[in-house]
Length: 588
Image 1 (tube, one colour):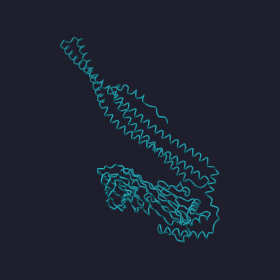
Image 2: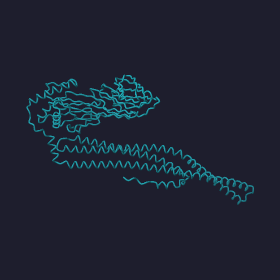
Image 3: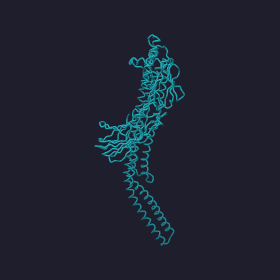
Image 4: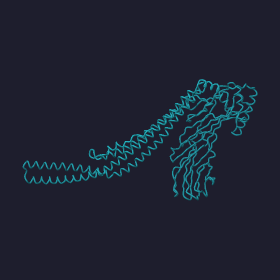
């Protein structure tokens, strides 16, 4: 993209004769024109921000459209085509979201320029103060000169009229004195005006050149911003064109033969002959016993018994991970992301049942409390859902039984000795409300000197973040402390790792305090790491129940834990012992 044409010739015509204009108001015109430049910068920033908002809304809409494609029927010959639609739509959404990122970076650049403008304008106002005085002076002298001129003319005409009307010599003498005084006053203001005009023209010429430089710099900076804006949009259009071209090629390569072949592969039940039913049932019962005995020892008691012949038992586990990033002392800037995994466990013997039954019962289930989920990502190879559901708090799913059977057979071949097999069914993201979604809130205080570092961490349990409050266990705080720690005192007691220069606390409740003696201080406030674990509950409250017959839920496990917690210290600390708050509400 070629750079824009320069605007310099336009400004030359503006400032050639800056003192011209009605009542010498050129200074006022140029000054306010400079102020309008700052308004234009803010308006350009608002325009780009609005464009970014539109692009973000469009990107999110495209993401929802991709989900619609993924939820379309996976049955029939046409089913694989939906994958092409889904992938293309997701790429288009990513293109527009990338443009949002570029525009947000550009907005930061414009905001920085607006701040620079404000500083430069303030500085310029101080520098041109003498010019403003010169303007006010010539305007004042001009008014006085005009009045003295009018007075001089009136007195002269009055004297001439009296002479024609034959006034007395005495009256003529008085009139002559008035004319003389008016002449001297008029002459005085003519000289003052000449001096004022000289100073005015000199200062206005210098000031006009200053204003011209400011305006040229302003327009050039605006050009650069608009050029970056155009380049970002153009790059996005190129990317969108590439995605569309790829979509067309994929569609052209999707032949009738390939679609029919995929249908045969997905719906085929294999070439093995059915085995002995009684023998399969024996192996299945044996596998049940081994599988759920293991669950009973490692995950708690299981209700499964050998008499469970009518329905096949399965187990489900919900595991949620809390990721968080905190920057600065404003709680509104907290970013909390909670993701979850749903896993189904099948006893190994169930594979025999599936492979020996021409059409095993379809495993269907319902998720509840889905209104608390921002996004649900099912396993596209195994799971189907009904996209036409109107209830936002529940969602129905059913498994692709041939695909499930093939998957279980594959993993059983890799680990034939296993008594049960876990299958990742879906992933989801929980709706987040910032710091209010954190089960644990913390505040950290640092006080750093050249010889010691004082640290205090206050923390509070937040049951409102959970639908069903549960205890947090194994709560630990890890704090790196630099500066050559030679001794540590803390309440409660902490474990100091001299090799890694880190201190570890295992917490129960309240707050922790520590004092570190240093050999090479002061310390530099570092990122805190916090972890915890909770068994028997989830943050989302999402739950699962089986729908239909043929299966029963024998065990349901729920848990959540921290995955990544980053708490960055933004404020810098001094080495003179001043107390500085470096991080506020930790959320996990």
